[in-house]
Length: 218
Image 1 (cartoon, rainbow, N blue to C red):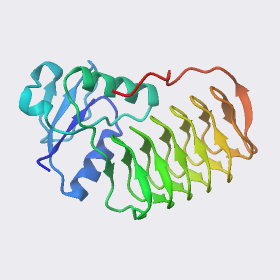
Image 2: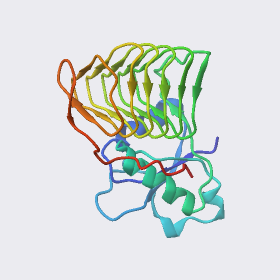
Image 3: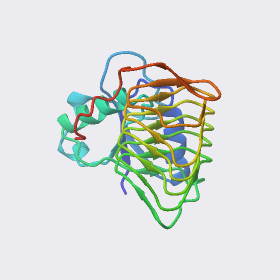
Image 4: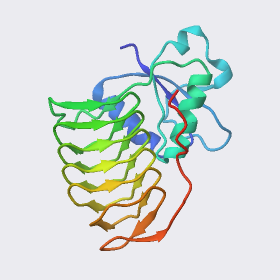
């Protein structure tokens, strides 16, 4: 491992990804600025534009450090269009990773999380600080889990869904594609695709919200 590229520099969550890489002893080769606007790269990290990527840089694995599924999907697609071919899976060294688990390419698990055995996570999943994920979880591509979330055993979360900070999902439930579980919600029944649920117990307050559009991973 010669290092990785950070593709997308506009999110403050970038600082957590940098810390995870530091703890793992993985150097950051550069941060690639794919959009105009704020840049949250740490001091000493070389900034690049997409046009600066040469053959050597394109061979390096990359992480898309963006929390929102639609943004992370766009970043992954833009990275592929720029010639990057190897999404890097990053699990913070503070996480005790079970022997029997399947973690897809480009997934990031932040510090202090707990991952249940026999779980499977798709491509470019983002699990934020201190989340607890039960056994036999099934997460689709581009799922985002906020800090302090508790997901019980045998929960399925469809691609592009978001679970907000501090929410709890009870066992054996399904959260549909593109659904959003609001921060602090307690989910006691299945959530349909594209629904926003809030409260304790969580109730549907909106349907057919936007989000991940089911486009293929690149």
